[in-house]
Image 1 (cartoon, rainbow, N blue to C red):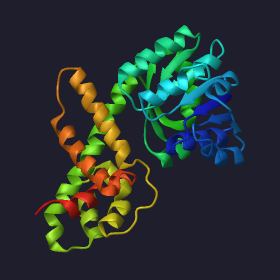
Image 2: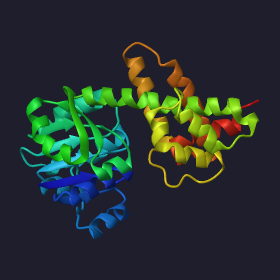
Image 3: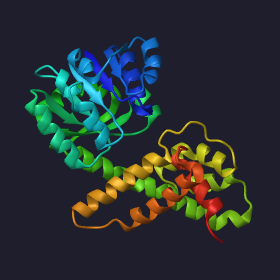
Length: 295
């Protein structure tokens, strides 16, 4: 299938690479063209504009930073909707509020296309292995059409409901993860006076009720940063977590309730970003808090 991918951040690039490896014909576009070059070397075609990308594709995947980026890529004379043919399938994977996906679904339908939102659970590693968790929203026929593509990327695809439902579910599953890393940092601060080997402490947490699935899979990374070593390239950085926390808090307020734990966690992530930790992996927040928590 001819598939276009717009947005070549860490996840977008991994998704495009996975699609190439599973035999699809892939075209890519990114606002910063240099990000497309590694994929071009693997056989992807580089489109000159979002409109050109949509014009040559049966399906287009977008995974973008926020609602402003979605508007910039979909709208305008060079946007995806300007170049789309009747029947083009759009699969939108960004982490945004449900209202953004609902409005976009209506615009795609008005342009003669089909729309599925499918934000995913997982990071770059699972994306490259086709082991993401897909949280789809949209009409049943469109979701069924998208499954051939989504099942190349995901170990599980769930149709949650109409457009907007996938976005709601994605915000919900990200919330405990982001809170967990801060909770682990507070727990580590309680035992820092022991002077114990960080690897031992992390192993004890991972082997107890204090260990989430995230810690069990990333224990080595957390132990390294607790020992003052580099964790390597980020898979989900703190600035991304800050953006998601703000989105969660805005969505809750719009629905008439608060998220007090999320609000307090956001303050800590903001503090970490201001201290220069914004682009490091969110799994490093335990090291930040254990070092910076006031005695």
